[in-house]
Amino acid sequence: MVTNVTSLGRSGLSDWLIARVSAYVMTAYLIFIVGYLMLTPELNYTQWAALNSSLPMRMFSLLTILSIAAHAWIGMWCVLTDYITVRLIGPKATALRIIFQLGMIAITLLYVIWAIDILWGI
Image 1 (cartoon, helix red, strand yellow):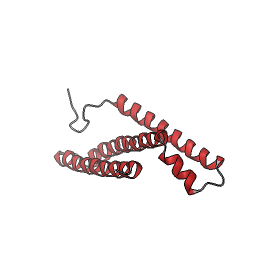
Image 2 (image 1 turned 90 degrees about the vertical axis):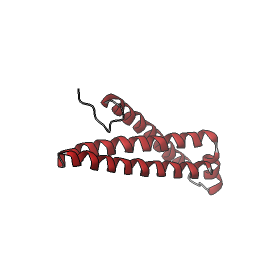
Image 3 (image 1 turned 180 degrees about the vertical axis):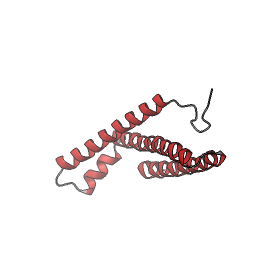
Image 4 (image 1 turned 30 degrees about the vertical axis):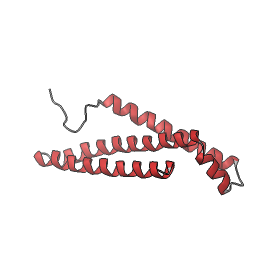
């Protein structure tokens, strides 16, 4: 039996499901924002601040941020696994892929923490 060192115990089905659910969340958020902007032609700062300071909107935004992070991680994991492994066959491929994946984890975590700080004003 072959185990992938960098899969973190996930299966292809769980990756597919996470990618689809996160895509639906991001689509719902986009539709909501575009709909809000279209229905509020004379939008001012007070209305925009009131919308974004409400708890349901903050939770929806947080869910969208986490969905973007999950979607990006799965996409980049697939790209790194396919192209780094295919282009570099041998022991260097795994080490290089892990370095790139750790970099992606660090960048994604940084962006999520930054977005949460902006969203909740921590």
